[in-house]
Length: 290
Length: 159
Image (cartoon, rainbow over all chains, first blue to last red; front, side, top):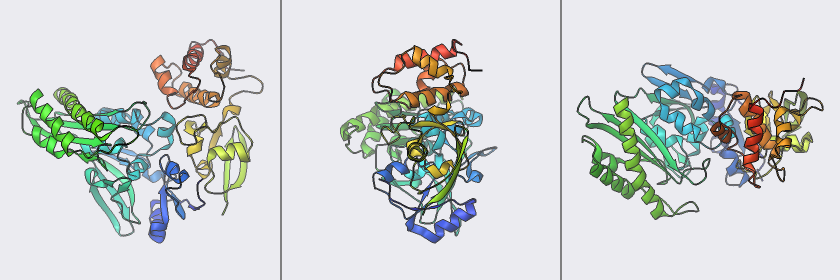
């Protein structure tokens, strides 16, 4: 049963930040509530005050610019999935959204809520790490920027201080000759990932060398992580099957998965080992076409 | 402390006071008495509680009732026009698109949302459209057949 709480529905971001500043650790932010209400029903989260930002339309937007795209925190998954700008500039993001939970959940759930929930098996954080996104958080003292890869810290723990609110996700314009892909392995299509992998490959001009690479893993550690050792195997080299195999092994080694009802630790490492080369190969093919 | 919730359900305005922790499904079933919407898994998995909120399908077990303030909700009771069932409802009947019937309200709402957004879905898109709804009797094929019949124009909207 959900415990009683006091409900506060600010009308502006300013009002929301003032409430967060006032109530600090006693309050919890709810947006779509698609993840939070499940935890509350299980009695794992029982805040005294709930600050509902679902109605903050000033944070619901997708802004296209020369230096990239900005997504407001209260934008729903479904809006991102259907956005022509996202489909054109970051197809990987629209593809990821189309596989996130179910249509009903995507209609009400928001991108900011998902990221702040900090579930290591969540889909968007992994893609944002691969896309080198930056998150803006606001607090009573002002705003600060956090790279997506530093935002998720541990199981259901993110880099928000009490009183802070995620307001925006910035996606940099992808460099030329860049391809990014994402996949998750799961048994039931609308379920969370057993393991997920995002890969972004940038090729040098004309030489086919992997100039830059970003590999991100989901459900393979206490938080969504970058597989930096695997990246190091491939960066600056012409990608070959042998190198891909080594990168997969490196990623499986640096992953820190757990055993749970979905899969054992060993099984998850094996998935990482298989999916990292597979996704890198697909990202490479996309980069060649870009 | 209870808060005021003003919204419309199937076109009818309601002005009620609810505890903030009340879920949309609880308001619909327990406060308003519209028990067509089913409460199944209670954890956003089964889709039996699917309703339309401002034209979008949502799982009403996972939406705070107060978030529906000012909104228009349509439940399975709102699909028929008077005594005339909607094309999907008639197609479900004719194709036996249910066995125990528990998932049917949710299936109807998801299919209605699908056809509102895309009147000519492919079979794959139909499957995706009801992806968030579980039929424990596994009667999915007859549900897809019913939706297909409506897409083919075999059932006309009531006048």
